[in-house]
Image 1 (tube, helix red, strand yellow):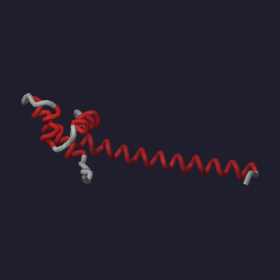
Image 2: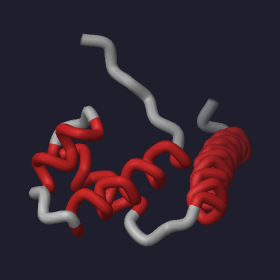
Image 3: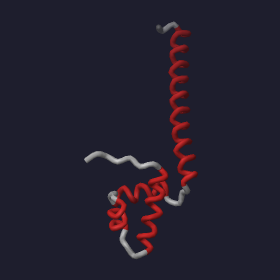
Image 4: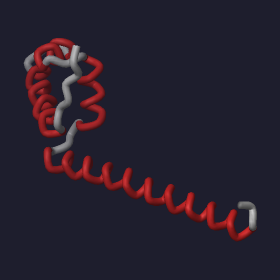
Length: 92
């Protein structure tokens, strides 16, 4: 079965719909089935996106991407420093 990818906006809208279903007396499993996802996915989404607005989720994803990019830069710089230290000591 192919895996579906949801945007943060779709996830937040689905969580809002699930809240409505839960307030109507449905269980979390029934709400998840109605949304076409597993109950585990519902709880994972709720943990990550619960209480967020769409603009907050967009900003959160942008910050995550920037964080990954900065970590990569720091790792590259640390590697360059290690190489320069080895060259300065004459180990190469």
